[in-house]
Length: 266
Image (cartoon, rainbow, N blue to C red; front, side, top):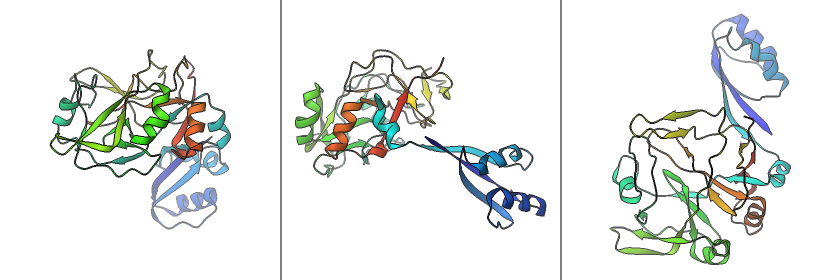
């Protein structure tokens, strides 16, 4: 696993310029600069003690896992398929029309009560899955793929409505994912609490491994926890190693779309 950090700042004097050029091993121009570094690299270990003295910004921008870490994980988080169009969150009715107990302020919601409505039929390729813009935790599948892959896992489906709600998509269905029975151990992960509904929402990007559930009595499932920022919230999709390997073998997904899960220390 490689954790990447972004160093950003302003080179406003010769002394700082010389020192940064020494760290990075490259010439730098005066003014603002940005450099992405492996957290375990010699360059980052050299510069980290100068972050505060040099008034630099040091932020984590992402994690890259090895193929071995992904293929050996018992449970993985699926980052979802290609998103397609859906009403923007500036249109608050999409939440209240689709879910029970929805909160426009944070985007959290209860059980689904109605089909999603999209402007036109999504053009999914064979063996394709997709998500909706602003609702990344819901999974949609090409109809034949649902019958041949998801249905055998005992997953139900919902229709996807078009335009004014009187037409139904013929080639795409929503795959209904059950919810984990127990909450994940989210110890140490950043979250916010909605001042309107009081529900907790975690930062949309987890750094490193995704929290692993205590039980693995499922094929594919979604978290009880919400993730997101602003007015957007969604659940995360978890699946077993066997499901992940089958999705890659059938070319439903690629290896970079999976994040391995690991227990978080309490």
